Length: 428
Image 1: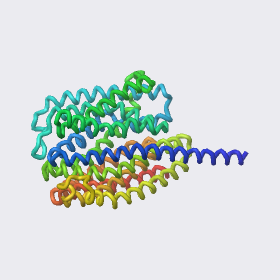
Image 2: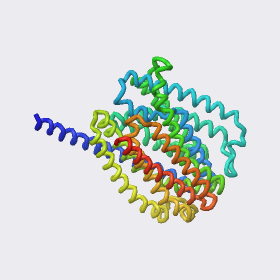
Image 3: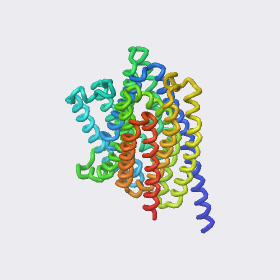
Image 4: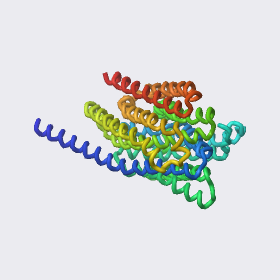
């Protein structure tokens, strides 16, 4: 009996390792495509001046980020946690209700933008057209379906399908933008078109496919949405905080240094975002195995997986911290005016370390979310955002783009330490 049990445990452990390796391979391939997309965005430094590059940074980093964090009602974490905990029919009603509320909220937000004065859209000495802001908000609203499809497939250990709704969608953006650039002669508007058409089109396709597959159904009643909304509302605050401490940098730099400075900072941030390629490979490979182990009561196995994945992430990020500044200086990836600007080169390793801290903190959020402690996650994110805002206010006027990079590092360092402490406290 004991021998049979031991054999079963060995086979189960081998199966988990095989699944993890498969997920790593698939997500590495998909995220490599995502990394190439980041590099493609950097090639736009050769086509756009720094002002136009900064203008699109505001549209994507600030407008799309805040819209995706709010109007979508942050469905990703709810799907990740409850796919293994709720019956399919009940979960489909919850997701259908969240999707309907997101579409309603996004429609009202897009309509409301038309009543705002033009002065609201004037930033850093440059105008961001109202129609461009409205299009980005509409695309973020439709992206609700894409986010749901990605999260469902990640949780069910379907890495190829999950990557289809994330990295493949992002991979389409440069091709759409380049087509618009050559066909219509657009500049920053071509990048805007790539963002809106890729995210909006993928969102519509995902909503249709999820409905056909039975993942989106009409909720039994409005009262049945209390649980998903109770879970999602703190996560919305967390998502807003995430976007806030990433987008606040661009806003501060644009305000104090002008839209051109925001463009230079965006170039440095884009290159450092290659660290997020490592973060996403590890997180997406780790997530289904962790929640599956936790759901069946194997808390010790889930903890070992968390520690091992954190160490692997840290080692990979350390290598990129060394490599990325060299890539910026010694390759023609960035246009010469960017790679010869001292603040761009100095900011890259600082941002890379900060984003590495961010990726590991996302791993350590898993035990908190598995216990339903969304308020703790939200509180840590909000405090981290406030730290970043305070650091930016103090450092950007004195140090410019480098000050914004240090603000990012400080807030993510706090997030990592606070998340690990909260996870250990919750476990004990």
